[in-house]
Amino acid sequence: MYGKIKKVLLVSNYFAPENTIAAVRTTKIVKYLRLEGFNVDVLTEKKDNIEMDEILEKDAAGVKVYYAENSEQCKKLCAYYKRIIKPHKDKRMKRLDNRDRVNRKTGNVEFYPFETAYPIIGSFDYLFGMFRQKDLAKNADKIIGQLDRYDLIITSYGDSFAYYVGKRYKNAYKNTKWIFDIRDAIYRYKFIPDYVKFIPLGVERYIWKNADAIVGVSKGICKRVPVKYRKKVYFISNGYDDGDVESSDERLSNRISFTYTGSMYGGLQNVTAFFMALRELINENLVKQDEVEIHYAGNASAYEIFKSQAKKVGFDESCIYHGKLSRKKAMELQKQSDVLLMASNDYKDNNRGVITGKLPEYMAANRPVIAIVTGDVENSEVRQIISKTNIGFCYEESNKAEDLNELKKYIYQQYINVKKSGRTTYMPVESEKIKFRYSEIAKKYVKLIYKLEGEEQ
Image 1 (cartoon, one colour):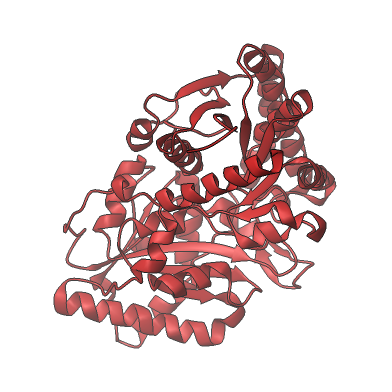
Image 2 (tube, helix red, strand yellow; image 1 turned 135 degrees about the vertical axis):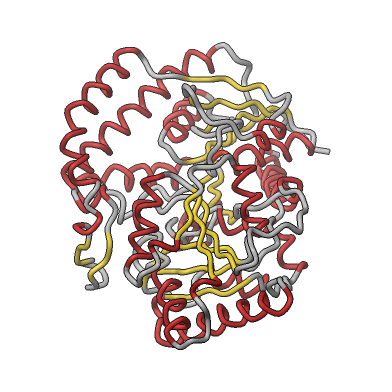
């Protein structure tokens, strides 16, 4: 079935059974590569008191997992730093009304995440984070030194642990093929202060030059790679797994329910346009507010950001908070909802092609999706995916005058559908949607591995 590449090591900070969206991609890749016959081991970060994802736990059954942890000196230093910086962060972290900054790239006043709204503290946080990741990778050397050699190493970024381990492994074993999987953009200009941006940009330059293959979860990430290295770049998106969601006809209530699950990425994810469209429909007496429910599941700090966006048009009291749910419970909530909400951001000259794992995850729920994309990009990747699959509607800030009216029409039509039949309308193009199944995505990885084998012959 396959030739020279038999033993594979996947390296990531996130893996089953950790209950986080970041662990889904890595676990699914391992699951399906093993089904294709590859012998796959995992090296990940040891974490205490993690929340368990029972779905991923089953996916990873039988996988040999090795755990790296930080040195005692690193733990003590990082704990000391956190104690020193905590009071300075806390008094600023809670002030969501003091995060608007002028974006020098666009000239617009925009909401900024904590890291770049307060760039001095953000820079120190970034430096200590990189220090911890490097220490983690150094301690992983002891584990790797006791293992047999691997034919292929896949490092899934972020965090930087994957980069440091991949770099060390490739330097030690020149003939081992290295796939650098970019799940999360390395340089994110709105998250990384200018004072330290030379670090992630340097990481990118090293990866572009030294990895045997570069995999990006979005076309925008792939385009960050310079043209001279573009021949070793592959677009392999995030996906969904049909087996993750049990079929159910149960609804949250008789009202139309809109649900957002997951992170707000420090406020970069912004669904204010959805709230504005809904408010205008209510003011025009087309929708009754008492027939609408808005649900949120995620961290308490992220919920405060979500609620602050709802508050701008008077919906904060209408939000229903479910807390941080297990992935299984979150997906059950998605399945019981009428319409699912997500957000993304996309900029022409900066962090292009931002597609969170939430979009393909929503596909498993078989519920219509409303996506809000902020930024200056027209026809973003999120819009292209939603258009091709016909799973919902995408609003883009770059076309807000027209898109707001179209968004209102979409919400109103789904509202009417629910009133008449108790169901929303959802008619996806299945031939396009199934391309995002992890079973199909894994085939792209297998094809890439075959190609790497051919380079050795």
